[in-house]
Length: 405
Image (tube, rainbow, N blue to C red):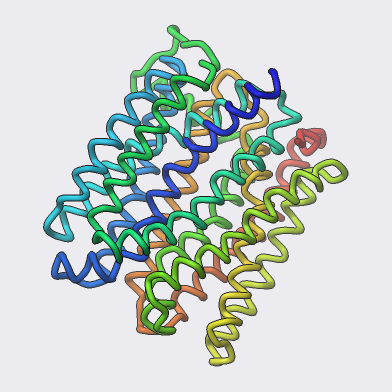
């Protein structure tokens, strides 16, 4: 692949991967304004975030088989069209319950890009380059937490929260044209694949029972759920407890996201000398230690605004190492059914994320403890899952651990 074509391909894959995160991050500063406009509470509005996660989790299970059966482009175009329409609908809802429902439908459209992007990485690039490509995608994905909340804060202040969803619809339109112009087709349609429930479930089971898949899919999913806990809890913690403005919240969000970007790009350098397995182990150990410090500091009231930001910065920075490596290791054993593997991995990740984000809202006790406790719990559990999973991989097949990227 020529350098120019490679850049445009990775950039387009990054746009597809970023639609979901952008849809999450951009409207976070508007939570108080949305709650006031729809005559509800911020906690109720946060359920629209949970419904979005549920929609992505469910949608990925749908799109995975479709991407393998019809090729990558047709399901992708369909998903982008659904996203465009529902984004416009979100701009004109007049009650909280409708927003929750439409956000679920919006997620069904956005997840097509996320599943297709991961599958196309496996289609278009050699397996030994997958983790590096995922790290480059992280550069695009991680821009969304920098740009989206900041942009969302300014858009809300200047034009109202409705304009946020109009901007998202416009972004999806630009992404559609990028897919048409720059994205290769990837794996051809598998006309022999059945879309009946029985064969589809069997295909998912064939993927799910592979030790390398379930170890790294679960590890990555639980670790990233700490991020979803932060997404759900940070508007309340920063804007209500620490009383920062919408614009200041956007800049805090941007600063924290810089750690994610920096670590994701440092990961590409570390991969030259270290395996994905070793990097993941080290990153999740650091995340666990940071999570414990964050919880203890919150519980004993030892943290202020800046120390809280610093610990969260370190905590989420580890995702820059964990996400690309666990993603690459999860789908490494698969080729022909990479779409199904990608979908199942994403469904696990967003399914757990939906539960976690809902818990933050449901356990809200007017303190930062629910958010930090859940972040800490996710970090500890993911590290333990990784340790146990590595033992299972090696006991089942001593050579399986060598499928590194």
